[in-house]
Image (cartoon, rainbow, N blue to C red; front, top):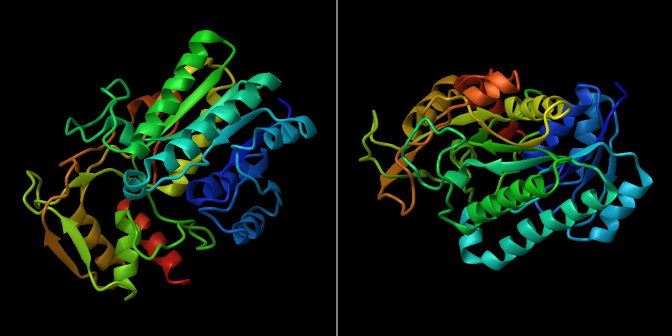
Length: 334
């Protein structure tokens, strides 16, 4: 089989950069498009440092369809992994039009360009948010899908667009990867999630409290019907997640149609369990306060990853301790 070239949109972002490394390490060539809204150009050098290969890079917004066509015309591209999207739930609630424009219109422009070029291999970076705030876990791929915020709605809408594409044209090979809660960083500490002043996810928040940038962590709800009263989530190491994209590409060589997969460990972890593990394995203290429940939060949601385990021949390998250690090793660089 000839060496394949994969276009990676948002390839300098958190999950995109780790997947770019995994692709290069598995013998793919890649071309990255990123507008640097939620990433940094320095990541390109880190990818090269880790893989000894320098990816081609284009700095533009995927809503610029003519520029996408130019890239497709100038390179022999076999497929795309589409990461480029805004991803903050709170921000999406405050500015829904921003999210509908960027996440949906961007995806449509990208799909149009690929369809016009006759390239039909497409992997979409989706999310467990398409299951809304369900409390029926473990969650299978055929669970009801609904959105409880505009960010989740954009993921759901793009999934529906891709499903309709397959109905209209059976040449499409589409993989939809529904992430649960990505955490961790590359073991080298060269790649990780760029810290925000006020993070929206648990692990970056823990990191900032541990290093003293924030005074404490608010835990939203301590009276849930869980072992310690705090919410349960399914956390997956970002390098495991990256390897799933490689497995999905391999599967799409032989499987057409629309294929959705849950990417998680299948293990539910409470917020307090995550904090206690982080403190123990890293030797630091994480101060927290238990406050009132947050509207729309699920009590417990974790994946049934058996379809991905069986069909993609993929399984999450890294445990909670490795997630916490790698996250803290990355954070200490700042």
